Structure formats: C-alpha cells, structure tokens
Length: 298
Image (cartoon, rainbow, N blue to C red; front, side):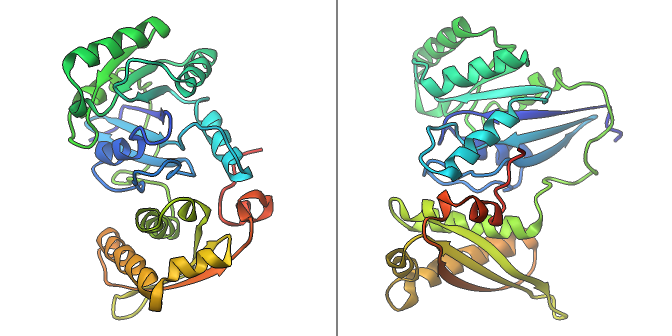
C-alpha cells in the first residue's frame, strides 16, 4: 500500500516512564532495550511503523535527568535535540497526580517549539480510574495538549487509540524509510545494546551504568553462523572482576542471555565471544564517549 502520510514523532519523558517499552509495543518488535534501571536508553533510537497509508517514525529518547557526568550531558542534549524539528511530541508520564520538574521542563520545551503534543499516561494498569482522571485534569491545566491518551505499554492497552490520534498529526508526504524497515540502527549497534541490556539486568547498583559495549567482529560464516565478538568496557578493575564473576560465571550468564536475544533478532545461530576491559572514568572523557558512538550534533 502506498504511503500518503509520514512524520517524525518524539517520545520523551523522565527516566523509567516506559518510553522504550512503548516504542517496542508500537512497532511490534524489540528495537530498544528495556530494563527497570533509569538511564537505560543513551542514544536516540529510531523505530518505524507502516500502518495503512501512514508511516510513523518514532524517536525513543533518553529520560530527562540531572546529569552527573559528561555522558549524562550528552544524553540530555539528545533529548533537547529530539524535541525540535519533528512533527509531534508524545510526553509520557506516569499516572501520578503531580507534575515533576522533568515534566515541567519538557512541557516548556514543547511549548517553546510550538509543536503539537499528545500526553500519554502510561502504566494505567497500575491505578484506579479516579486517579487517572485526576492526572488528566492536572496536565490539561498545565498545557493545551492536542489529546490525552491513557495506555499500558506493557499490556498493549490503548495503542490503537494512540496511533489513531497521531495519524491525524502526520503531514502529507511519501515514506521516509523503505517498506518493512523497523529501525535505522546498524546491526552492530543493536548487538552491542543487547549485551548492555543484560549488564543492566544482571548487575547491581552503579556498575552497569559505567559500562559500554563495542562489537569488534560481526561476520556471517559459510555455514550460516554469525560470529560476534563483543568488548565490555568498565571504569574500575574491581568492576571488571564483578562482571566476570567467580570462575567466569557472571560473564557466562550475561553472554548466554545476550546470545539468545541476538539469535532471535538475527534469525540465525550466533557464536558470541565476550571480553572485559577497563577504561577509567570514560564517562567523563569526551573522546571515549564519542568513540563508543555517543555523538550528539554540536
């Protein structure tokens, strides 16, 4: 079917509000990693959905937070750049009847850009209707949202209603991406993010936030097996020991979980090799941040 309307829609909000879960639910594929730890998403992730005569291009952004490192500065810059030069913005909030400083800042930026904004109240499966109504009333007084759509990204509730609303905000025009494409992320980047997701899921406290992953080898063999070599970087020698674990048990667990997800995504058998290296304070070293692929526009 020919695409007659297409547009770019930014999903923004505080950390852990469910932006990546919603992104994956909308496109029907896992294109963004998801954990219950804040600041899981570091880069802007593009997800594409073709629906009827419309193409939706969603930008999943890092959660807006107060940065404590230069990497954090980069992530905030990504959010700022993503709430500009787009066709619409979805502000994701939790069903809590108070507006926090992150939401206030995002509303201010959206208003300053003059963009049509849809308030998306996520996690509605966790509250009663009375609470939801109070949240809707509070936000509608704070900003003239184009629409308010309650959803549960985890349960898949309200997604069709949200897409119906967003369809009305898409400008006329041809597809921005080829048919069937669900993300513009290179496969190497997706494989690195899969490993990082497992680090976040399996490790405690600050350690996984100080990790970065690079894919040093990505090759399909003649027998169809994809060879992947991943290097995990951390900030301290003591963290390296924790990531590897006793007799290599933790690294083996992380690698096994990552390999399963890689095989699911690639539709092929994967041989995954993982190594751990130390780069002290890399999150505050601009050259290292850029080397790991975090390169916001200047």
